[in-house]
Length: 175
Image (cartoon, rainbow, N blue to C red; front, top):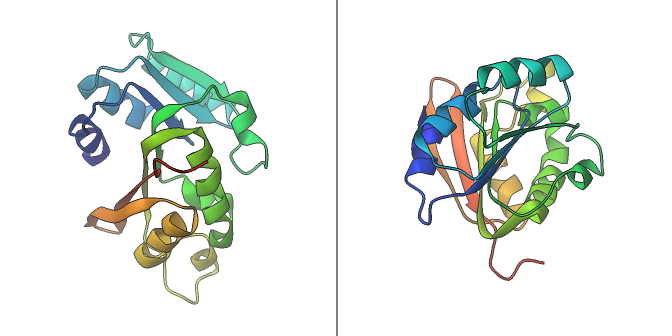
């Protein structure tokens, strides 16, 4: 999986990872197989999904499960910062309108350590006249949302078959 390989190549190696919208734990499993982590926090609003991920990740003692909804203003209150990496795989569009994405990223920045990495994988939007177009950001809109939230060294690492992976670093001087 591209995100797992991206994290494995990160220097310094991440020790604490937060996944937003973790679903059944597929990304967590891929990352935990290739990265030696102290903590991997799976954050999801769905108790059934968290239960599925608990079963899938039973052999990974570093996995922690937090029920919460990143669409809520105070979603970071249930977390113990700071994280080296925040990842979101095909979850950001759940914010329900792309105009809210920069605020989600500002909040993600607040739980990252200085120099921490935000990694987002999401779908390219459907046709512009589709009702779903307001949910999915184009690659350029995604990069602009990272920058608007204060991330630096913003870039795309992969754009393949309708999915893209973008990253940005929390600046060392960010509050």
